[in-house]
Length: 212
Image (cartoon, rainbow, N blue to C red):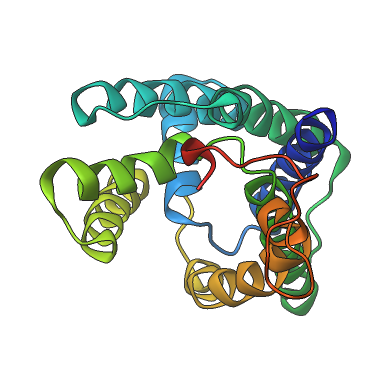
């Protein structure tokens, strides 16, 4: 459990750092960060603090969906936005367009790698992912439909509030799935708990339902 918690925290810190790199590139963001950036401009709060607040508010939506948070869910709310807020002052936005593209690409790859690390710890989904699965389990919405509906709403709302939408938003949507697909098996505690013959190594920690 100690190793899993350490893996979780490392993944969440890197995830927040990757988000900060994408934010500073200034060519577009993923839907939830677009919303947080727009809400930050409206309220005057730092974008990282808005990420934390948004995570908490999304967690409240779990109540009617009858979802149960895990350690990873709470850590996600506390760590990701804080890591964003602390990383942003350390970065500088480059001027040339190519440099911005490369910066955004590096941030996307870091977010994808970090996703594999923290999801692989299997200590509970993030509040936003839990919202998608909750819509599926509670009301039978297909996962893709729940994600599309929620993220489209969040993206449009964030854009109207002044969040950055650009071709980086499209780039993130295209790349993040394949990157996580590659990174997750490298850090998945469930996979590492299996023997070469496919049987589960009984010395490995069990994975709770909240971690799937």
